[in-house]
Image (tube, rainbow, N blue to C red; front, side, top):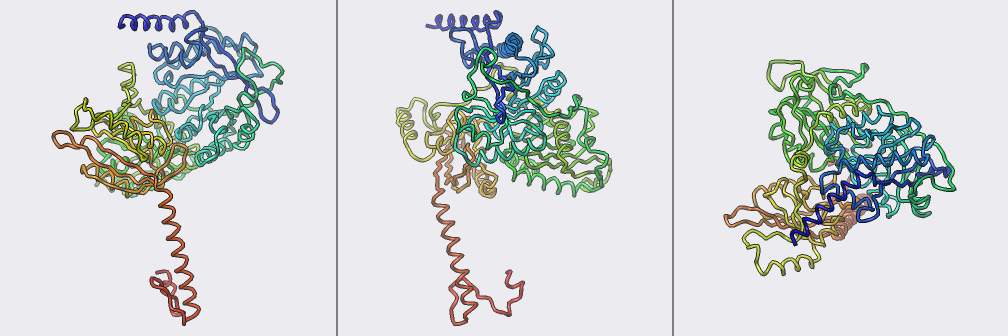
Length: 621
């Protein structure tokens, strides 16, 4: 049996590489339509393998990923797309959209995106589709890639917007010419998450002139929703299925892309303070004031939540004090992406926090910067050290506090161009793969042998209960979930495959009580049991009240190694109690008013009727 498996694996490898070597990858093209005119203004190239097990792109890419030739396949697909576009006459005024795998952008040289081995005619207009995942993994590399793509004459589309909050957070940094809405936005019922995405995308399109493209339009209802979301371009079976070339019976048109200001390809040499325009007012302040200004921006970022990016500098690693680490732990839990830079800072100073060690001579070493950027808010504190030798809190800086979006974006790009790949990404590049995410049934609880006959019964019982059950392993980095039952999947609005390996902080909402979160954290640190009622958020953006009970599990030595969580949706109970309190307060207010107007009426307990002798201050009290 083992020989058969090895033989099949060898054939699989040979087949995938043979497909690439033989140019057996082809492309089909799906029309992209201008919704107002109905004209076909572009086509998206979709890869197809040869007849057989690798015909569908998912199987083909999965095989290439398993055998370590993903970059080669991605390049082959892009070359096939450009080759097919030329062959079938998809030249100007038409435009061709081509994809690039996020994993390829992680570790492939920029030149490989364009080195097709064949000349690309000037009449071929190309839009390169990328996702935000690549920027989150390797910010510096992707920002340089985007600059190179624009130098090459290609445009940028941000794909799958709405599938993840980070796409909204990184949209101002990527500055795409086209924003492609994930198909679920037009096919699913509207909810809070869709409203959030619509607001962010429309604000970006209004300020930049970017085009909005809705995918997955298959009927008239989808088309109506796409228009309501602000899309001016559409793609889907309603307009045509993928075909070998120009869609028959269609009217061609021209894709009018916005004029994009060129980015600085040497952005890594620019400091945020140098991004300030000449007209920006610059003031002088001691370090004590900058600390308070920084904390205020951090609080603002906490309110913005998962659609926010925060990047800060600390000059030296010693300035990332224990108190500062506590604040940034809260930021990591609430904000989409957080990075810090400073001399001797590691790649990951703490779980979830990205870091960068500033090189000798880097001008950012002499700066104090914090940048907060989201779809609807932008602010930056940019300061330069004056080099005082006195007490630390009295050190003086020249600084500017700016809300000008272009300046904030440039400052963020300047800092992110210095951020190295995350620890997980480096491990992937070194070891040839990402460490596996724990999956499957509950791991043996501490104190129970792996082969305990009761394990199977325990698994069935946990799967059957109606309340959410989770297991968190404190021995793993960032204390991830290692088990979730079906009830918890329903509560979180995500399948187990997307939940396992993540810290529970993803459930938190910007309005989640920070004090309650702090009490949970303190209980876990003490190895104690705790119960809290928290406002949580599902994957679709809707909220629910979670009565969460956390119970520690110890090993043979008595050390706490796991926590079992029991989650119950008590939204109806919380809302009912709130409604009762509101109604009670209203009745008391009316009774107090009646008593004030008619002295013969006795005010109910708990109320204090006003008299004409009450001062305004007393009434406020």
